[in-house]
Amino acid sequence: MALTANEDGTSTIELSVQGMHCGSCAALIEETLIENPNIPAVAVDLDAERAAITFRTDALSVEEICAAVAEVGYPATPVDS
Image (cartoon, rainbow, N blue to C red; front, top):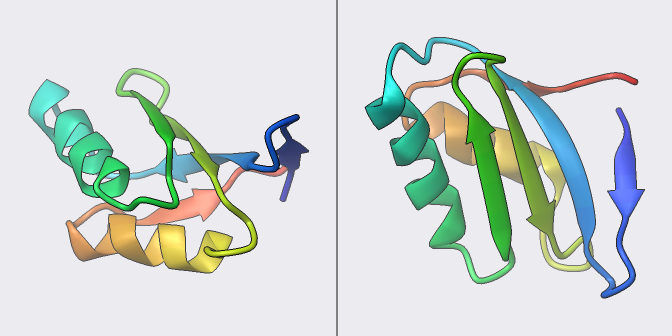
């Protein structure tokens, strides 16, 4: 799993997201994650089946992010680099 540390104290993780079929699927994932105050940025790429999530590592774990994505119906796993 590759976490990228950012200058503002956050980190960014790339996830592989399975089961997305359309833009609404990607939007649902983005909307679900961005509601969390510990996630300042989310970018979902439908075609690549990937999501880049910036989050506060002192308040949230990668496992919790994956669980939140799975709760809305899309299995997610960290991408190894």
